[in-house]
Length: 300
Image (cartoon, rainbow, N blue to C red; front, side, top):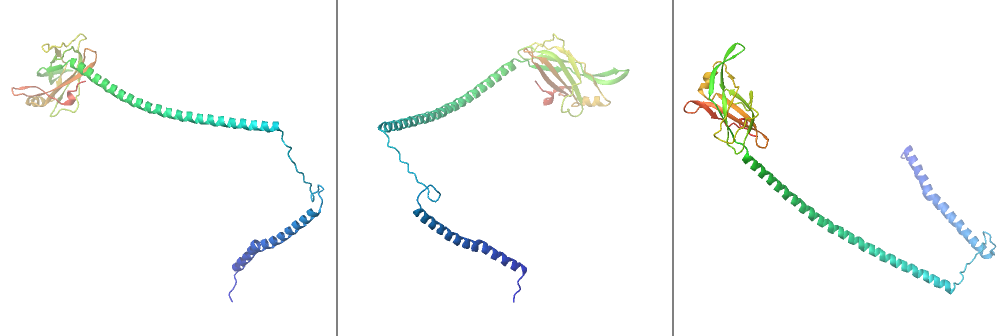
């Protein structure tokens, strides 16, 4: 005989209780209530059929209200009121339709205005672009016209000199460029302000110039637009030499001299023009040869 565990017994008890609550009780009370309610309804029907109405709960009184017949004037007034209401409804419909048509027209007009506004803005952008291009072209033309009228500066250094220098009671070997010759090949005057200059000794030119001296021009110095006019500007340049450097310089390609002229044009705009030369053998001895390294030949 199989054993019944406590869990099975408890589960069976729960099942029986649920069966009684959800099946047994509804059947029991449902059948009894239905029988009693049908019995009470039958008794009330019998009592109401035999009892006379006296205003009590068992025999209430019944009152029937009958409307009085309307007069001809009242009927005419009601017809007029109905006709007036129908007329008001018709006008309301008409005004609603008119408002709808006006709203649709307004929307259509807004769309048309938006379309034309878009076309106008597009044309305006195109016109602004054309005007900007014209202004840029005019500016370039003006700059080109001014550039044509600017001075064209040329500088020629004098020959390299060699000698002894004296500083603080000491004597040392040096070389120098005593002066430079300036000329203006352009159509307008130039007004020199100052000239910066320096040098480099060695087998190659440094990437950027190092101007060691600055010599100013007199306030009334004018460089006339005449190639035949070549004023001379004296320099305070002195290049101290170390032992053994001068023989290397005499071989050529071992010394560079460079300068930058700052000047104002006829419109008062400040410009600068750089130059560079290398002391080299030119076939008939040593002389200055133009070096076109970009960093040393900048123009502004």
